[in-house]
Image (tube, rainbow, N blue to C red; front, side, top):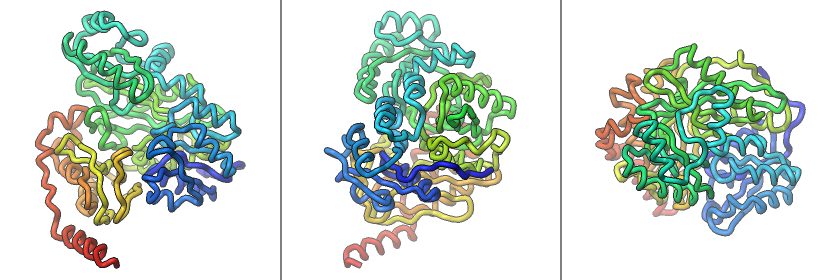
Length: 479
């Protein structure tokens, strides 16, 4: 397998920030592509700003500049960038932005606007899946605004049911309800939340699958009709439908079920003429039945675990595909090598309902050793701003066996020193030692059914205290 190409970009504007901006910059550097970063005044000390070849401030405020389609395209045109990579979040799934790039002669590194539109609405995506014969969870036909229609469906399907925003993700605009009263109380709230988060208040109702596994397949597709999958990730360790830990491959998929679900994922992608990287998400119930949920038309936070078990660079291939080159990988090239786990290191306090935390990093020492990967954008003296996602870094490890991978992640978390703000590190340590997780017994209800995980010990070790004190003394003395 080679990744040479006949055409490549000269300069890419990275329309994102933090660790995903760093990830894109690294891939560009390996392909000798110049990079330009954008940043807000609040994020001017971000390491990605320093690592890019060029950097330009956008605004106003800490967030609006990252969402200003015209401003970003204008910057790209002014500096001579021939492509824009949106990363994830912000404008990554915005079809209007992709169209604006296209109209301005700039390549949008992602799927076509039509594919984004087709997959951007969960209602449209469900309808498409049903049309081509991919199983979906029973649900309403299209959006629901009338509470009586919602109540009628719940009576027919049986509780529990789920209220879901048609647009967006990340658990916003999503409610699980178990009675008529809860459905009445939550439907309007879910719609308001969806409208505020995604500009679209449409919701639909579907049967809630109890204690499923959340399984997603990574897709790569070029502009020449060649589509492959890179096998699956299990993203079942989540709270409020937001992922915290991802593993690859799944511990419960049989080879035949893996092949069947992979083929279904490719079928979905082909139905919308998809190109570039994407993820097809499924629920897998306790009886081994799978249901299509949605397709994310972008790079995923958790792509690292797939890269670790396949040795395929997903972001690099995004660039190769976007430049118009054939995908240099065939399905037969994709093999699973061992196991991988990713822990999201967030500036959050798990004991306080995962409240986001801000402050200055007073000590930072990342783990290392065989099979250990860090994707991050923080450093000692970095100030965690309150305006963005709480993700500080992603710790990904790989091992030959599941047991080796879990023990490697446990050791890596023990080595990880990040002081100055509360983080999810001690919580992740507790999970890596919990009996059911170690045995592979988990589903989407795992955190709710294991409250003892929140009784973790977050007292700093003597070595950590020495490091933190030394850092404080050095800062005080101006060394």
